[in-house]
Amino acid sequence: MMLTVPQRVRLERFARALVNQDAARIIVPAARPSEGHWFGGGNMISDKKGALYVVGRYRNYGDSRTGLGAGERGKELVIYRSSDGGATWAHLVSWQKPDLDVNGLQVLSIEGSALHWTESGVELFVSTEKAGRDYPQGYEDYMKPGTGIWSIECLKADTVADLKDAPIQTVLHCDDPRWLHVKDPFVMDRFSGDLTLGFCTHPFCWSSSNSGYAVRSAETGDWTAVVYDFFARGFTWDVAITRATAMLSVPRFGAFASGPALTLVFYDGGESMRNMQEHASAHSRPRGFSCEEIGGVAVAAADGVSEIERLSVNEPMFLSPYGWRTSRYVDVLATEGGFYATWQQAQEDYSQPLVMNFVSMAEAKALLS
Image 1: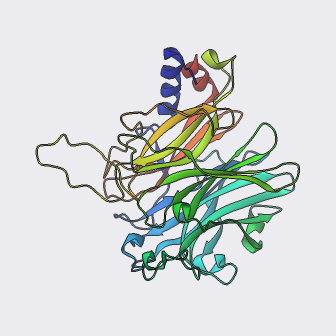
Image 2: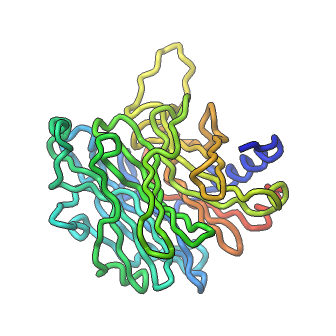
């Protein structure tokens, strides 16, 4: 992909306006104002009447990397509804971990999720860590006591509220040690009518975060392709973690009114899976690590998965002013009136509530023109 310099400048300007750390306001606080507690990892959708729905999980303190199952971790999946453009939010429906048990497997923790409208109603993709599956042959000893394997399920219903009692069906799991854990689903409708289901993968050794996708055929309803490594990790601030979280079609304004359609790919990054101790005389900077990732963005072809070019090459683009500077799980909802961006943003108390920012369509046109 060959972007002109003016195009790159406009895309960066648009992305920064969406994920505006100073303009963001908290819409769903963490359960407790302390480190290890957050709400988010989901997305937002709107219905025909203009109501907004946001899904996410409450995560309370606990570290899966220790293998001890300490703490509550991903405790509860919740959908909130707003009828006033996101000014206020009301609880609509929720699931505890046992509610999401499937195929005889016990849910240990709830992670990312995504709502999606269909022709017949609505569906909810959710990822959970489950006990009851073994690591692949030859790698059994890598499975730490008290942990499980992540997979992605889907619930379908006529309305969002009816999802509570919907049956649960596994749509994506993996037995390959390279991509054993699949989690954090997000969705994008393709122009063809097919659906892209993006997700994060971890290897059996849990040493990186990577990005994959699957495609559901609009014609057959079958998942026709699964690609586990479409977005390679970076070389600097995102060398250990490159986890795509959302795709947004670039509006056809200004420098993008003609030519090939493009897609912005928002992603979480980091230099390591654990916090790195810096040398006393080294340049101090946010590095990002597991559970405290920092944010970046790339541009891709219309499908969101090919011809990917990073806009945040050497440094992250999205940093909270607080805590570990954590800014992650970006999602952007495009509506007729503008764009709703949501993400988890670290606070001074090190919690990560879900925050939101709105960019009107007129503002977007000015930023891209």
